[in-house]
Length: 218
Image 1 (tube, rainbow, N blue to C red):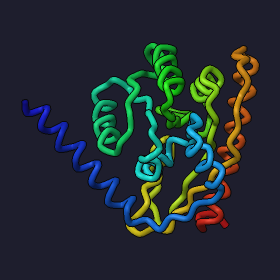
Image 2: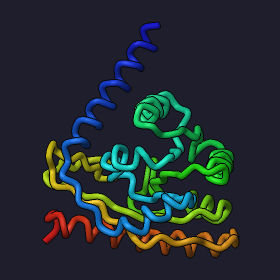
Image 3: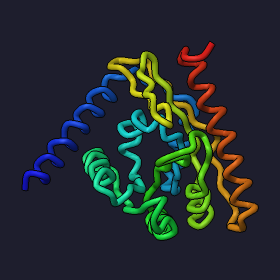
Image 4: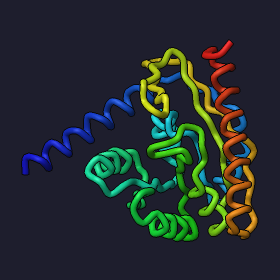
């Protein structure tokens, strides 16, 4: 009973913290028109962004009818509680144990009409290296890949493997989208590797643009 109460309290405080800061941000969006049009048409979307920037995304994309793949571990389930409070669906799965099962679940959710949020270098890195999950789901489901990045100033950058960014209240924040695209159905290893490289290049460039425009890079 005590563990359950701690879990509920932790997830509630985390949600209040994330929602409170996110609600105060001064957000400017670049390239969002095409994404909005696809969403209004009911197209299936896979939003892809680096793990270190996902704090900013949780509140921004909460109305996108999206699912998130979350580890079934104790820590993962705490994160899942926070995501549920923000309106996201949960796909329980692990990149270490039975990753194929998690991806198949994700494909099924997308085929049923949900969107998906993916951090392709998560959950453990290496930083800025795309793992094949997002590409595989996009190929099998026919969904649009929506590359994006987010940056804020002032913000704290943690000393974690992903250089996790936490914006300070009322920070100037930039959300930048790349051009949406779809993939063919070829799931050969060579093709998957090529598309992972392509997505990585796009996300690195978007992140550089976001950091430059927001004033983190000179």
